[in-house]
Image (cartoon, rainbow, N blue to C red; front, side, top):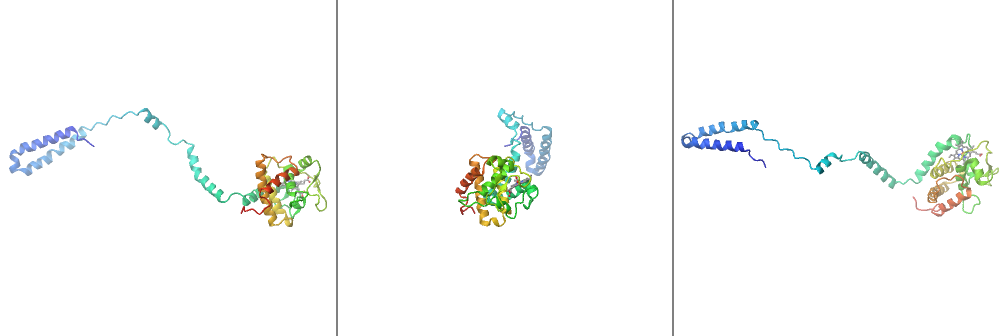
Length: 280
Ligand code: HEC
């Protein structure tokens, strides 16, 4: 609510007094003239008086300590900005994850990537071999066959142990230079028989990466030694194997024997691997 300044009220009162004073005789015979005089005299000095006597600025009220503190504080810490920026990206990613958890596609894709990065240099992108043995055309599964319950040799366990330990590591862990299936056509493999040796990957690959590279070799290079059902079953077992190893606190497969890996795989097979479970 604005109060009419004192001086303006005073001016208005003066104007009214002037009008009624003069108007004693003027009101009767010359009212329009008096009105004109009022219009001419009263507003003009009033308007002129405003800039002459400007209303004094109200004294600024000093801030209380609380208000001063509130003004001094930055309202949003700087680190919050990137967090807020990434929140929607994370949300999209998370929803995508829920809709499509990394199972089949993820594991196979990971295997392809690991193989290309760590194995293809010696074994060839298509597994045809080079400075490493030929794996394709079913060769890899002749050495490490698909396991069926009751088999004397677990080829899947042998394959994992081989990649984890490499040539020298396999010999050290097993106490023999023989590896792979004893029933391999033309005889069981012996370490170093290819003419050069392979290093183990237990410390350079995670359990999951290693299992994924094994899956890639078996599913892509297995030829007629494995069919689609066999591939689906091994995929399930290998994924479960990664979980079992994690539960057992094993993050490095180095030094484990084929028999020890077979034990872990049996746990994985018992936990749904090998059965036609409703995962897809
Ligand atoms: C430095 C070259 C090199 C790299 C890299 C390499 N290998 Fe090998 N690989 C070999 C050699 C050499 C042999 C034969 C070793 C021997 O006779 O002792 C072999 C043998 C194998 C075998 C046994 C094949 C058979 O039938 O006997 C498998 C399986 C295998 N490698 C898988 C892998 C995987 C999986 C990777 C990647 C994670 C990999 N290799 C990386 C050189 C390599």
